[in-house]
Structure formats: C-alpha cells, structure tokens
Figure 1: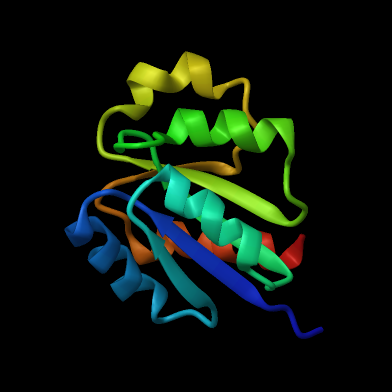
Figure 2: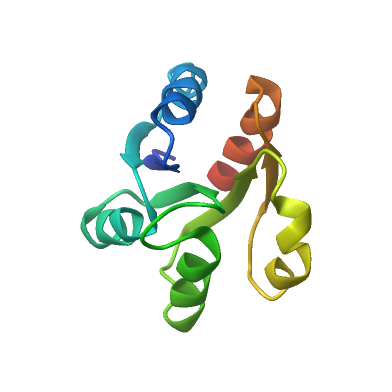
Amino acid sequence: MNQSLAVIIVDDLKFNRFAIRGILKHFTCEIFEANNGQEALDLLKVLKQSKVLMLLDIEMPILNGIEVLKILKEQPPQNLFVVITSSNDYFHYRNELQYFDVLGYLEKPIEKKSISQFIEYVLKN
C-alpha cells in the first residue's frame, strides 16, 4: 500500500524546526514547517497527503498549541495525527491537554527513536 505522509513541524523557534527536520530526513515523508499555529492550520487546508502527522509545540505566538487543538476539535480533519512537542511546558498544560485527541508527547530535544514510533503508528493506522 502506497501511503503518502506529510509531517508538519509547528514551532516558533527556527533551531527546533531545523533539528526536527534533520531527524525526519531519515524517513519517507514530506516535511513542512510552520512558525505558529495559524500557519499550521493554513497548511492543513492545502495538503493532499493521505496522512498528516503534526508535531505541535505548545508555546508559540499568534496561535499556540492549545488554541490550535481547540480549533481542530471543532472540525477534526481526517487522517490527522497530533503529537505535542515541548521542553517543559507540557506538565503545565497536562490537565488542559487531556480534553484533546492527541497521539502522544515528545520531549525536546527529540530523538529519532521516539519519533519513529509515532511515524510507524501513523502509517499503520
């Protein structure tokens, strides 16, 4: 089965996007970047891949990760899988995040082994 996977790296810090992109280049996927939540939502509207994995930071300007999740909950796109990425603010938002359908959590700095488990899951489901 030929599955087309897009990964959207949503993070306001260029260094974090660069580091995650470096890990993702070892996988068969198209990689997109968004500087904030609004850019990520705009990207979702135009992506044609059969599956999308969004690596979503929580703390960002314009629309933060929680605000993006609220919008996605109202009209959830099909075949979208969201993984929260964070260095330390995850625990601060843990109670709020339990109300959203997220696949999991990756702590920064992200490791190849951790992200590969999510990619494998998305491709199988």
